[in-house]
Structures are given as structure tokens and as C-alpha cells.
Length: 228
Image 1 (cartoon, rainbow, N blue to C red):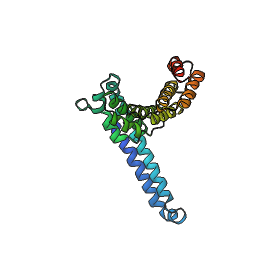
Image 2: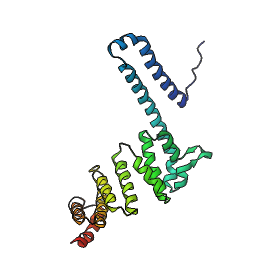
Image 3: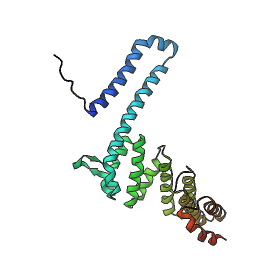
Image 4: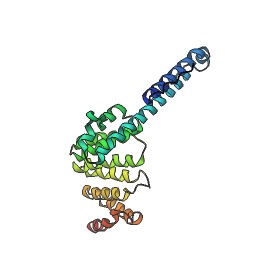
């Protein structure tokens, strides 16, 4: 008599995929090790390891995304301390824990920026800088945010030359970032403070030419007048 199959939980499905991937790779090597060792040395072992690691990273990234979705309402509501620490009683992991456990995944990298922003909003600038600097994700908007976050830290500490350089770099990460004009304006202002008026003027002229719809365009003329 046929019995109804038990439906696997999400966690069991994930674990099953990981275990299956590992044993497939291990089994392939065991069955073919003589040819592998003869013709390719350890290459197939490396390929199997990369395959397993990629799947593991995929699962971790998915998990990080799920945890991020649970804590985002706290961040969006401006509850930055709770966003950092989470709500254990409600089974909500904080951004700090997500970064600690999944920081190498793409969703974990997103959590780094949110964690840095949260520390920034709480006035913990050294902690914020640490996570801005540690960002290594692929998203161009977040790359620019990470650079601008570092720039703001140096600006606050009156290292205007370093701040200007980072703001300028943030502005040129991608042409599609609507904040490029603001980054260029901040770069120009910091170049002014650093005594490099020529570079400041160049950036202000770029704003006037290429960023006419930005908020920076409305302010740039007063800074040009200070230089001329």
C-alpha cells in the first residue's frame, strides 16, 4: 500500500541539496580518481570544491536575504539600535549578526551598508567607517554609498583632501546614480577646503554641464563665486 510522502521543510530541502552536492562530488572523485590523478592531477578536486562552495554560498546568500527582509522594517522605521541588535524574542536577527555570519555573500554585503548607516545615525562614526570600508559587494549604488560614507568620515575629521578624493570616486562609479551631482558638489567643497581651487572649479563646472537636474546644480553657482 502506497503511503503519502512527507513534505520536506525548507530547511531540510536546503540541507539535502548541500549534502547531495558534496556526495556527488566525492563520489565522482572516488569512481574516477585513477584517471583524474593520471591526466589532471588535483584539478577535478578543485572544480568539485568550487562547485560545492558556490552552492553553499548560494544557500547562504538566500538565507541572508531572508534575514534581511525580517529586519528591514526596523531599519526603515528609524529604530537603528534594534536594527543592529535585532529582536531575539521575535526571532529577528540584527544586522550585526547577519554581517558576522553572512558578510561574504551579496545580501550580507548589503547588510554591511545598512549596518554602517545605522551606526552613523547613532553617532558611532568609527564603527560606521569600519563597515563602509569593508564593503565588497557588486551593487554600484552601494559601492558609491560605501565610498561616500568613508568620505564623510574623513570630512568630519578634517582630512579634506582624502574626503574629496573619495566623494569624486563615488561620483564616477556609475553614470546612472542620481546622487552623482551631490557627490561631485561635496568633492568640490572639500577640494576648496583642502586648498585645491582648480580641481574644485573643474568639478563645479561638470555639475553645471552634466547635472542640470540635480539638487547640486541649484547650489553650485555660489561655490563658483567663492572661487572666482
